[in-house]
Image 1 (tube, each protein chain N blue to C red):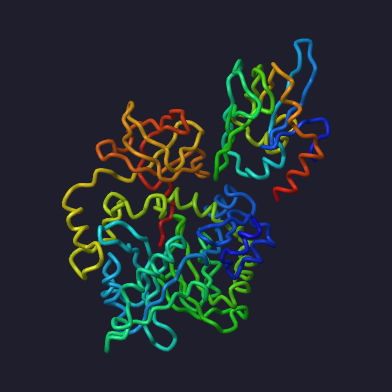
Image 2 (image 1 turned 90 degrees about the horizontal axis):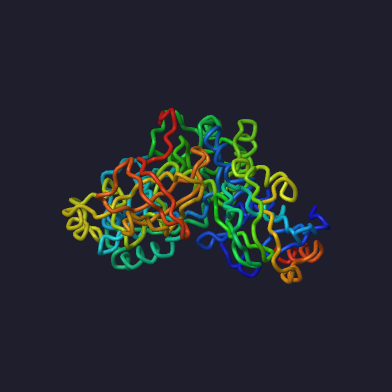
Length: 131
Length: 388
């Protein structure tokens, strides 16, 4: 169920990396496993366009009835687009976390952090260990 | 993780919870389901039809013997000695300084043999502490005083307890017990026969009490028949739209109902009047620990009041969030969650009394960012038909 073409962070964010004329662009969201853990998603707090983000550092928060968790950026870069459509429609995230439920697009300033991310197999192995 | 789970207490329904996908967490040393499907789903179904919750982790302390009434009167803040059979009262256990050691329900019942007894229901998180406190006040020379004997038993592990809450709770339970539930008033209870083969002719205790803001009941049955009786409740509840509910919904339901929770609104550093629990303190009768301290506290108006907050935004202010007026801290959030009924974040807090007026707008520091909130009267939710 986790797509093959994504990179995954230990903290359950995913990144889809594309090459554009301006350099590398990462679309970022949270995994279906994270959505399942949260269950009752009640708020997602995202940064404004133009915000600089750092790999492994929080750039927003995702909140369920029971708890709030940081969203950690999987990459170094600058937020160039925010998915405002999910704000009033958190079910989009629950129903399609790897598609329409994406959070932000980040223009990479440094591709070095990509090496710390996992492929699908490694991520699924981590989930199995956590459980 | 597994190692830790091993050492937790399990209710008689532990296997059922696990088999039905309950997400098990450590709650006060018990392995309990926080949810089966989703907190919001279980919450909404409780309000609309009914929820069935395993609350066997709640401590149940039984007192009997000719000295039980006086012993409890000298332990609890609420008068006990004038209680009639079938009556239940909300009370506190306070320390010598008047701080709240626990909030409890005390019920007075009579068993099938005509013997009267009291059951004190305590918080799971405080059971050890309250049991120690009781035992320290009940040395053999007190427990065995001729004509004033007190028999104290911690029956928590012997009895399961279920909360059946919501508008359809009564119709679910009525066929299963030999008392007329419509005539049972709020905060009343009875020893009953359970009219189902699953109970194997054992009785139980049913009371019109709860922690959700709905009409509802709490049912205690012996641990050996608990799983079978539970199964009957769940099966009969399903066609009525009633569902098993976990501790997550129990918390959101009680918060909407404005009910305090020990460890959040209540603690040993909290005195009853600031918590709005003056009604549970009877200061002119028996001498219980903290009575004189509470008399002195009652003389001066409390600095703080327990209040309700509705957040303007979507971020939830949780326990510990400071409340500010300008740069001054004027209070602190004690419980916060997302209210499924109001579809917005709500919180309870202690606030300096001069600010504690409905409609006042305050600032809450929610994890480093200021969020506006408005004071609203408690409870956040009141059911339409306050029948019972």
